[in-house]
Length: 240
Image (cartoon, rainbow, N blue to C red):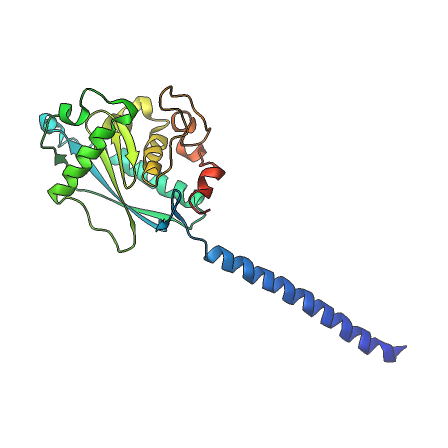
């Protein structure tokens, strides 16, 4: 019987080797597929967001210039941005990362707040966001970023509003400093940031009724950021 053991043993070794080789090929294929995944702006595969560079500005209308030395917004802003970095890395599985800088001095606007707010501040005051973003760019205050990074201007505004569009967001300073928003401050700040990547609201703009439970909908005003999330369907629009 011993003379049959060697061939049988050889066959077993060959079968085990074939199985191991097959598993190895599948692992290599899986790793390659992950490495080639392209994370991009919402529904825009031509705009990568692997590296996102945020520059935060404190903008004060001309008639509120006396408020400019008040730096009470800085500490809560740093906390909100640090939490956003952690949240973003988890949601995007490390395939997209955020860095940020804070412009060192307040920017005093050329106009009083009524110019930026107008008489109509619904939908988060997008007029202020547009006007202030243009003014910052024209003033030469826009920060330079690393080549290839997705640039975002994040404006803390001493006025009315919370709004976001591609590459720019605005949030009322009161959302950062008022204790009434302490539990959801980071969620509100993150919600506006994600508009800069093109993600739409998860609630009806006319009625305020939430259509999603995540950060872009109900979660923005009901949960702290560490308990929030972005819906799987939303992430799919960004290449995940």
